[in-house]
Image 1 (cartoon, one colour):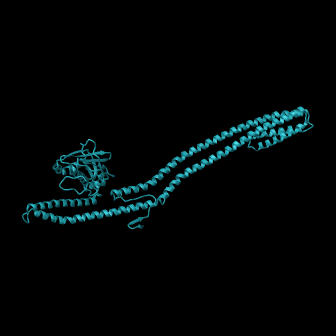
Image 2: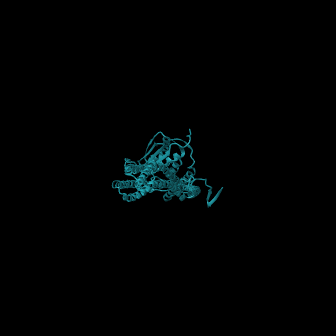
Length: 501
C-alpha cells in the first residue's frame, strides 16, 4: 500500500525501525542514555559520602563524650576519695556535705555515661563503680559506723579508680576502633567509586560510539547521495535509514534523482532526434558540394572552386560534429551495459596504438608503451573506446615530433594506467570541467577538425561503469621540462562474483 506526500513522489510505508521519529529526538535520547548512568553513579557516591559523613560525625561525638565523661568520672572519684579520707582523718562528719555535693555530680556524670553506646564489659565496669560508690556512701552516711568500717570503705576507692582507668582505656580503644572503622568505610567507598567508574566507562563508551554510528549513518548516506547526484551517478536509488524526517529527506533526494534521470533522458532523446534530423539535409548539402567540385553542372572559376572547397570542409566538420553527438548519445544509453570478459591490457594498448598509427605518423609522434602483464575484467569495446579517446586527445594536443607515454601497472587490486603527452597542459581551474560533455578547454588543439569536447566525458563514463575513476595528475619531476598533460585511469582488476573463463 502506498500514499502520496508530494506530486511525483510515491511514499511506501517505512519498515519498522528503532529510530525515534525525529533527528532531535534521536539526539535527546542519546544525551539521556549517556547522562542517566553518570547521574546514577553520582547519586550513589553522594549517598555513600553522606552516610560516611554521618557515621563520622556520630563516632566523633560519641568518642568526645566518652572521653570527657571518663575523665570527669576519674576527677569526681578523686574528689570523693579526698572528701572521704578527710572525714576519716579528721573525724568530722560535717565534711559529708562536701562529699554529697561531689556525689551528686558523680551520679549525673554516670547517668550521662550510661546513655552512651557502650559494650557489655564497659557497662558492667561502670555499674560496679556506681555500686561500689553507693556502698562507700552508705558507710560514710551511717553515724554508727566504726573507724574500721570507714577505713575499709575508703580503701575501696583504689579499686574504683582502677576501674575508672580501665574505662578511660576502653574509651580510647573505642576511639581507635571507630577511626579504623571510618577508615575502612572510606576505603570501601573509594573502591566502590573506582569499580563504578570502571563499570560505567565501557557502557558510556559503547553508548557514545553506538549513538555516533546511529547519528552519522543517515548523515553519511545523505552526503553520499548528494555526492552521487553532483557527480552524475543517477543509477543508484537513494535510501536513508534513520529518523522519519531524515527518511523523508532521502525520499526527496531520490525524487530529485529520478527527475534528473528524466531530464537526462530527454536531453539524449533531443540529441538523437536533432542529430538524425541534421543528417538528411547535410547529406544533400555534401552531394551538392561534390557535384559543384566535380564541375558536373559547369566549369568553375578559381573563386567559385575556393568557395566549394570551403563548403566541403565545413560539411566534413559538421558531419564530424553530428557523428560525435550520435556517439555520445549512444554512449549515454549503453554505458551501464557491460559485456564482461578477461581483457589483456598490453594487447588492448597495442590494438589502440595500431588504430592510431596513421595519426601518430602524420604528426611525427613517438609512442612509448610500458605495460606489465595484467588482465582486467571489463568490456573490451568500452575499454578500447576509453583508451582510444585518451590517445586521440594526446595526439591532438601534442606538438609535432613529441612523445606520448602509456604506462600500465598493477597497484594492489587495481590497474593504474597513465597517458602522458608534451602538450600545453590543462589549467588547474579546468581539471574538473574538462570531463563535462562538450566542454572546450582554453588550450589550442592541433588538427584539421576541432573536437566536440566529449572524448574525456566518455572516458569518465566508461571508467565509472567499470567501478574505476579518471583524474588529471601533475607531471612528475624530470619529464623533460614540458608541461604536458598526464591522465590516470584506475580500474579494479576483478569484479565481484566468479570470473568468466
